[in-house]
Image 1 (cartoon, rainbow, N blue to C red):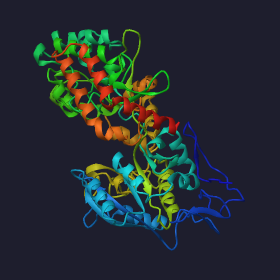
Image 2: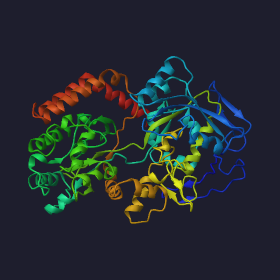
Image 3: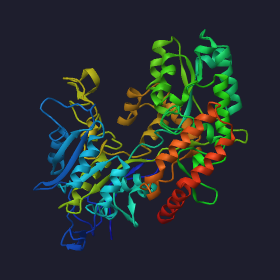
Image 4: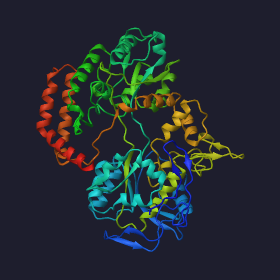
Length: 567
């Protein structure tokens, strides 16, 4: 019987204490069986151990080796580094775990991926634990045969709070499952991070006595009024009614038009589930054609930038910050960045969040955000794989949603991202002696320590209901995010069902590796030519035929073979 005695967090966030069962180990926090425990030795065979090796603190200490790709923005106290930091001292003192660094590299120009590949190809020692964000590198590490079944270890050693966090979206395992074996542990991220809504200049709406648009037709009316009756005194040529760009893709993290196609039943540049349960590439769906024609119409009328095909995500924010854009699509957190700066340029500028408008038949769709970002792999030769779970269980218990009395109640590390005054009150920012340190969360083995996907949105919902900020997470949101962030979160949740995640998260298929770059090239070229009026609408049908015959049909078959295997 595998009994986990850590605190359970219910779906509603209530906290219960699990009683210790007599048959369990003598540690009240030990997530393992009593008596003999099983593990996998370096030969891959199951070994029987006399007692469970899991400890809440190891004495003598055990070691976990790792490698680091250091964010260039990360800062340290004098004399410290990623190899020797407050987090490595914390792990040793609190958990009896010594973090040993094989190497580190400042992660610019993909330096971390390059160095890991070099280590693999030259037969160098690979670490006990490695966390990567690059999907292709993760697959290559899995295929190397040097890492073990992480899912089995997770089932045996992960705490209930971690397991419940992972169960919020069981599909998070799909990207790292090979032949039915969960080879990597997904790094969980906050939910809905890039699920779109519309940010609209409320002061412009109010001046024109307009309501927020609920349909594309109403959106067109608002854009026309912003352009020709601008209350800020801008001429039509100076106004960007809707700031979007698609240089990078039709489907990115800010300022793209993917939700426009959603009104016609598809999300481009990702794999969506079709009516028959199979996966279909969104950019060849029939709804793309009317969506492209709508973008052409809007470009001709001056509603979107004339050079939208040359604008990336950051470029779309420039007119919004300058005060010349009326609408920009993007995530709930944009109230803090970059839109907080608009009022610095235009007195009285106010942005408010609005739902994604629907098409004529009431259809609305937007791209959805996966609940994970990266993966952690565990070496086959790791002497104490259970120690990694000691480390992460502690963080999920105490850091992921810190409550009153938690070691992380006020922040990550005292004198790094917070300090305490003589009365024990927390100080932040410039009030910290020696100045604040940038992102100490990234000192941990796993980027950002531990995240429960729905914790941030639960806190935002509490704030939106007018509750006083009492927990660390709520206080952090009030101090670090924009004034409309909580309201924006409620807007996102009002349309939770329209978020459509990319359903293919497997490794690049054989045909993808040889043909996908070409297929993306003809996709972007055709779409831009239609929007810019260089080719008629029929060019879309020609593109679809070419896409299918030039490798797309083979990719679709491969994608659905993978999808069937993980279902």
